Structure formats: structure tokens, C-alpha cells
Image 1 (cartoon, rainbow, N blue to C red):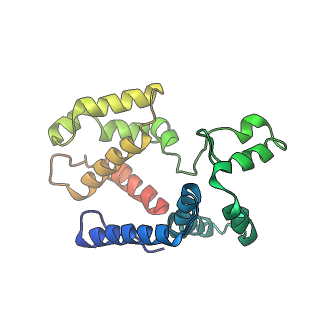
Image 2: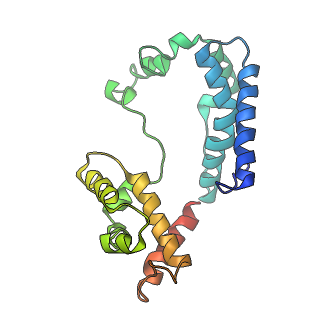
Image 3: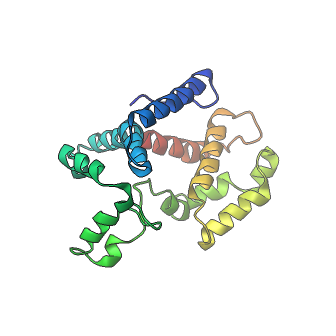
Length: 213
């Protein structure tokens, strides 16, 4: 996996263009498979190996954890690609065969529960250990003085998230990370941190992000 360059730079535009070209080539290489299996082939040759598996390898080895991917056994993958797409996705249901077989061994509510990714626990952090820092970084007075973000929109995001109406964790986290970055690198600007908060807020987020990425 090659790390993508910063967004908005010439290198990033080349990187994105290259990704689109490779996707087109993979679709062509998928041959005469049906639409579902063509999409799965492209995913296997691109997003799976260049993103998901690379991240799993990095994060697992960082803590000396050996991971296995049994569904990627070559024989099983070859068998899966010989199965028509209509048996995999139908009527809005995905993984039909796998879920049907799994329901014979485990509770049905487990086999058919909604998909849950392995993302970092941002939603939990926002309402627990990081709540005081977020209150500071997204304080209305601070945002008003800064003049970058719309106060009403930020307030609505936080209110809906806190009430459980919607999960805005990634959007709120992006705002928080920006504010922590501003504290660290725009010290002479409108969002300069108080002297006794620099290490606690900016340093704390920098430390957390370094461990995550």
C-alpha cells in the first residue's frame, strides 16, 4: 500500500487520477462476470488489498497481534467467484448464502444484524473522556472569534449527536482535530490556546493522533 499524498496538492490529483484509471482497468479485466461479481473483483484487486488489509496488518503488528483472514483462502475465493451474483445480493440483502448458513449455527439476530465496522471509538470518546476538551475547542465564543465555521451548524451537529438523533462523530471529530491543529500551529491567530491548556489539549490530541495514524 502506498500512502496517499495530502489532498489538494498536484501529487494528490495524480494519485486520484491513477486510482480511477486502475479501477477502469480492473473492471475491464473482470471480464464477462455479472455486475455483482465484477464489482467484487474490482474491490478484491483494489480497496481490499491496498486499503483494508494493509491497515489491518499495520495495526495488528503494532501490538504484536497475529491476524488471519479465513474468507480469503484461495480455494474459497475461487469458489465464491463461481457463484452467480444473484445468490449473493438480492432484494437489498447481502451475503445471502453466508448469512443463511450462519443462522443455522448462531442466533438469527446475530447472523442478520447490521454491519459494524472496526473504526476507532470516536463516538464513545466524544461523550466521555474527551468531552471537556471538545467543549473548549468547539466553544461558541471561540468559533465566533475565529470566524471560520457556522455556529448554528456546529451547535446542531453536537445537539443531534448528544441526543442520539444522528451519529455525527466523524464530522465533529474533524472539527475538533482542526481546532487542536490551530492551537498548535496558529498560535498567533484568533484561536491561540491559553498558556495552561496548550499541553493538555493540543498535546493530548497530537499524542492520540500519532498513536492512531
